Image 1 (cartoon, rainbow, N blue to C red):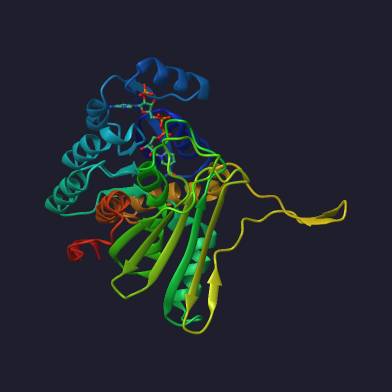
Image 2 (image 1 turned 180 degrees about the vertical axis):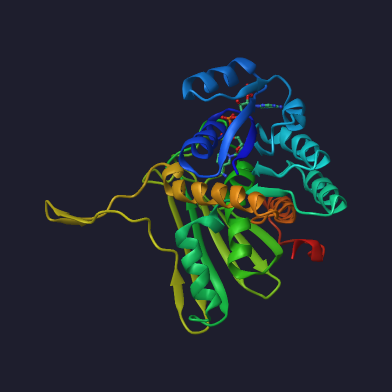
Length: 336
Ligand code: NAP
């Protein structure tokens, strides 16, 4: 059976997801699209040569009889209303991060989904679908390095747009570590602190860059994440787990090693999209398969909510310079 998908938001990632669902993955096709700018949606349909109906309202797309599942890839502040609308319609929905722009908005979705009585929401956190992170988690789960004690991580971008702010280092950048590291450790955060090293001369005046975020988990693991978004040299994701009996590192993306001109070298990626391109495919294929199998899995609305609460604490820590507590309620049995 082919899953008929409707997509809300035909910008950069929306177009990528339309392409992968319709042309690269199996078991799905795009039958409906919507964008706040209908001309943009029409152009995408035309350029990609797909037969999808263009809706002027995202809510009408959700309610359309031939739409089985929804992808929400619109602007972050619009996610909550579309995910709630999909839950009301009883339709599975894949929502790009953030699930909602406030913790309360995420909580509204959690409550609506629990009232519905069955999981419908998958949040677009793709790192748990990355081969390297999965291999790292397998090493930890098999006990090969003993219990994890410390994590040293880095999230580096070559440059960012002029509109990127100090807070975006948390809500747009660190948010992926917030989700992935809790999943990696099967643990949750209890406190956050942010410290600022010497500022890079490559960063614009309004932006504090780099930043070091210090997280503590319920099991007592200490995590440092360097967020450095003007590092110039590449897009570089690092994660080293120090355990009781050994150390495990996230593998580097595969790259041809060259010996030339008296140098031994491998390339470093510059574009974040290339780093996780396979993970996006795996994540959306998992969504399609889980909907076909009758139960949505993967990063949940609860994960979206806990990421938002943690991000709020990190922003409070950016402002206060203090160690800020992270108070998370017990994970409901509904979310496993
Ligand atoms: P984008 O290029 O700006 O695309 C968003 C699209 O949604 C735009 O065409 C926008 O129209 C449209 N839109 C805005 N409000 C809407 C509404 N109320 N109803 C329907 N369409 C609406 O942004 P993007 O980079 O694709 O990002 C989209 C989302 O994906 C963001 O939440 C972002 O954080 C997330 N994302 C996740 C990842 C990841 O690694 N998981 C990567 C990239 C992006 P206008 O341009 O006219 O406003």
